[in-house]
Length: 450
Image (cartoon, rainbow, N blue to C red; front, side, top):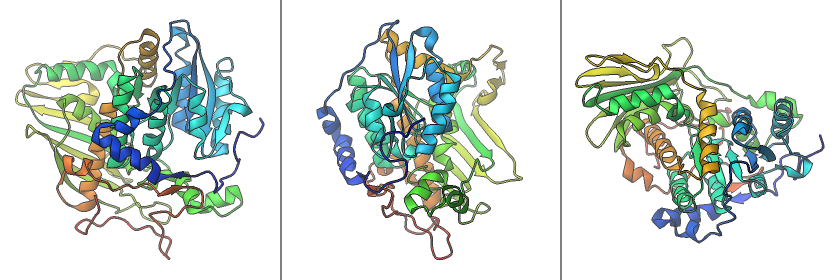
């Protein structure tokens, strides 16, 4: 395979000013006037037998899988992957080889439609009818905004932002997407699991009476770490701080949002779905007790949060990355007349019930639903609840980092941005290691900008 467009190595020239798109965020929060003034692009209305051209932005494991799932909707009509973009050539090349091997007849990508760098997403989006946004989530707001500006249908992975300005940017773009009749899917795939759908419906219909308390967990182990020394050995050079943080992105808040945002969002989203609402405030505690070291960045390894909804109902939330501890990835509801373990699709009490149907693969189903909506021009826009569930996780993170009770409305209005001011390989970073190589962690009880 020949070298893709742009540089095959990180360059300093490819940069995007955070200030520029934050201007859009601030104005959009007031009423979406900037996004509304953007050129619409050509909104593609597909017939059932039209070929849908797909672009992949973010070529890691999740993005490659999502692209494969999009290509597997071909039974509905022809679909091809026509463009790919990533900040790193090696990630793009590996993804291309994998997808070409698995879907040889549906991958029409060549060196002219592979784009590398910070602005690569714009070029790939321009060639598509449908774009898959699967970079680390810190980039999601600007990528989603660009896709909406260009008039493209979108599938974007969760979470959709890592800070309040990013959430507002997504909410503003979501409104414009709806006005333009664009279809938007978000990777909170439990919404497309038949067992979850039936369980939530029964609970909302009163199967356990009034819902008083809910619980949500993502307690497990550290998913992965990419050590600086290993990366520099692999690439045969020193990495700039920007490249290191992007390669090891899970451990930096501007790009990941902490594991409460990146993983636990799934469980928080289920409870929001059940409640039909979002928390009004949260308080909690957390820290970095076990997972510490020069390659574990600035995030916590445990969070415990109490969320309060407007009706007074509570959600008690835990997420933890610590070896040798009790593990659970689950959601629970307790009502005035019974209880439910939602992830097992089971209800106990007078209306005891268990789902006994067959659920399709929810990762595939979310793409099947999106592409069906595109081909049949049916309403489909998951961006708003994707943004608000992302905000729920950000609310919880801010509560644990600060040790304070945090109100939703005040935090959503925050102008504090986590992203670097300039996106360039040699850009100064807001979080830097000390002389000992360790990154500073938030300290509860000390002043925290929110």
